[in-house]
Length: 133
Ligand SMILES: [Zn+2]
Picture (tube, rainbow, N blue to C red):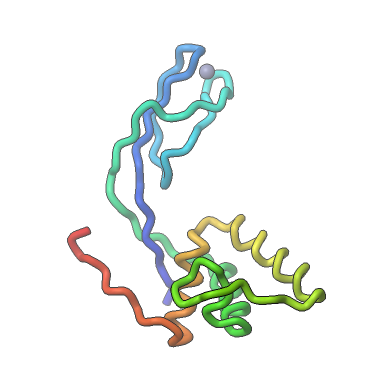
């Protein structure tokens, strides 16, 4: 069964100096390219449109599982319970960097995936989500 992660969605409204106006739904209040002139524009307004569940890419789970298996909670310095960034052997650094680059390029929240994998490993307890959030 695929793991899922929750994303916050925003309906962003953009207005380009060229006069074009458009709206798009994204999982962040991010910049977008003008459909007319390709200028990068920041939203002048963003509406919170709720949350959506998306499947976690298998590749992301594989990468996280690989490093969680080695480093546990120390896998990521921002993870609950981790007090340090693991010291890597020189040979591992390139491997780790390459994997993190792949992980962050995937369409997912790497932090959420890491936490989900740690739950699978029994390292942390599953968070009780507010159903009315
Ligand atoms: Zn434009």
